[in-house]
Image 1 (cartoon, rainbow, N blue to C red):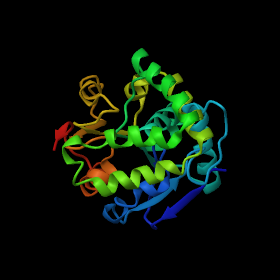
Image 2: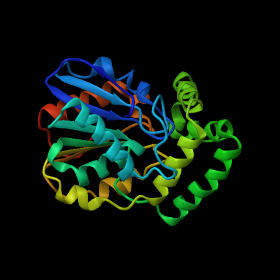
Image 3: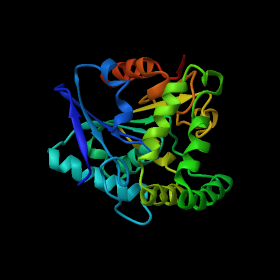
Amino acid sequence: MLNYEIQGNGSENLILLHGFMENLSIWDDMIPFLSEKFRLIKIDLPGFGKSEVVADIQTSEIMADKVKKVIDQLGLTEFHLLGHSMGGYISLAFAEKYPQFLKSFTLFFSTYFSDDEAKKETRRKGLRIIKENLRAFVNAGVPNLFNPNEHDILEFKIKLAKEIAYTSSVEGVLASQKGMIERPDRKSVLENFEGKILVLLGNHDSAVNSEKTIKDLPERTNIKSYVLDCGHNGHWEKPEICASIINTELLHHLPKKLIF
């Protein structure tokens, strides 16, 4: 069973899935701004936080099944699902396998595209560095995930992101990196899912091609998208704005493709 924590007593269940080399603590800055109508269920994904590695290659499908076990333990039959980056890939896999449980899913600085060959090769090269020196891998990669124009303002958050990443197990990082290489394109999930889909992106995101993700979104009234002036980590860079969008979109309806 994956480690999880619950905050709030709202009537709307919102499950939060962190990204690569993160854990459930990443949501701390946003939680004060999220509606009291939410009951927040924060999960440590396999190999991160207090959750154990579950496979040599942790695919999105495998991790979605582990999230489903938490859902079953809690007895939930209807909820919102939100995933940051890698957590978004898992949210897509969950929506593909278990759509009947979801009122909505949110791609939070994430995408439905598979990696192209260049990105896959970069991830493969990263496997060697992770094995040899995880700390060096973290130090080289984490700062690039923040808005480069605001590194001075975000210095404390960058340090925090590094400290959280350092706590990741080498086995968990390797298994998840391998899993991300294998993930398929899941645009079809967005084309077929009947609930609400929310997409939040950053215009300085070095990990997700925000322009391509927005451009290729299916033209459906149940899909809402926002582009924020930040990098890959809206939960640290723009927590209040991100929470406001989540509150509004998951509890109400707004026109699509608003840009901040």
